[in-house]
Structures are given as C-alpha cells and as structure tokens.
Image 1 (tube, one colour):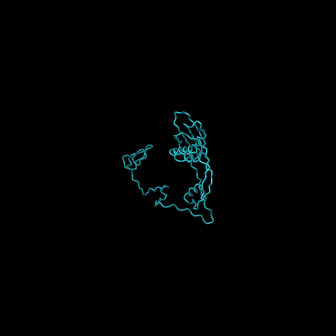
Image 2 (cartoon, helix red, strand yellow; image 1 turned 90 degrees about the vertical axis):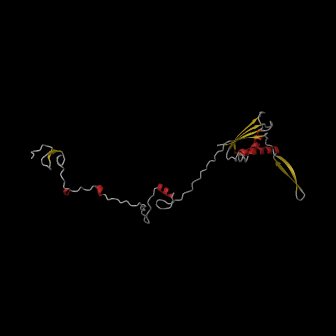
Image 3 (cartoon, one colour; image 1 turned 180 degrees about the vertical axis):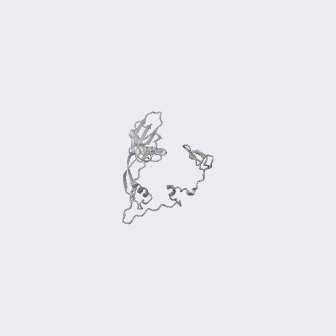
Length: 241
C-alpha cells in the first residue's frame, strides 16, 4: 500500500501498486484498462454528416423558364443577349428579331498596276490634219450626187496602227483612273511639231493603254535630236495613286 503520492503522480488503476507520472491510463508495466463502450455516449454528428447525400443521375436538359402569363410584359433582356440571339433567328425571350437594314457595301480599291515601258521602232510621224475630198457617186436612177469626205492621211494612220499593235503586246488591258504618260521621241523630222507627235501617240493608245486620253493627268514629252540613237518613241504609262 502506497502512502501519499507526490504532486503530479497517479496510482495505477490496474495493479494498484505502482504510481506513474503523465496522462497515460496505466503505468508502463501494466496494459491499458478496457473501456466499457456501452456506457460511453455517442458523439454528436457533425453538420457535414447531417447534409443529405446528392444522388447523381444522367444529365438532362435544363428546366425551361416559366412562360409569362397573358397580359403581363416579357422580362427585360439585355441588349447584348438580344443581339446574340438575333443571329440565331430568335431572341432570348422567344420573340422574333427586329428587321435590320442591309449593310452598306464598301468599295474595294482596284489594285494599281505596275508601270509599263516599251519602245515603238520607226520614224515618228506627227498627227496630220484630216484631208477633205469631194466625191461624186452615181445613183440608181442615173443621177449623180456629191458628198464631202474627211479622212486621216495614210502616213498618220499607218504610224498610229504600229503604235497600237506594239502597245497591245505590253499592256494587258486598258487602265482605269488617272494615268501618267512619258514620251521620248528619237529620229523625228526636225520640222515636226512636238504637240502633233504627242497627239498621234495618245490617239493610238486610246482603248489600248487607257480608255480615253482624258485620263492623262501627267504628261512628259522629250525630243532627242542625237543621230546615234535609233528612230522610234519610248512610251511609259504609269497609273497615278
């Protein structure tokens, strides 16, 4: 039998002969005492245990929103949702989208072609004045009638035909919009007017390099009087931006 225990020591409840220090249920030499669980109250369930279990089933379509009663206004729908729904044919609230005007077409600028440069060989011929002749024709009743006929001189007509044929080899189609033209003549007659030389070339380029010579907004004309240069005209056609 032990006497008074010092502070901090506990008598072993198993052997009742040894004292130990600490919070153990028995001394180190004795096994832990068995606890009668029938008298121990059950622990209160936690809030997590009280929560009902959710049974997961097959995913189905979300429930449809309740339809508004007759005589009541439809719920307001944000503008952004209305626009997104309008692209699918109906609005979010089930109503038909408001008709919208067709978009305004935007003019796409035509690509600007690269400059075209080529040389027409031969002696340049100035634009000749139209020749006027009086022609007399025999009518079916035996009478004669006369009429005035104007025609281009043969030299001018042949030169313009040559320029047009060479231009067709280098220009795929007539240009649209304003254009710039540079002409460099070589071997032209000394007494030929520069404006008449230019007029013959521009008339030949009509319908070939451009649709009309009124499109020419920039014109550079040069006459080269050197004798060591071959006769001809060098033509540069460039679209203006």
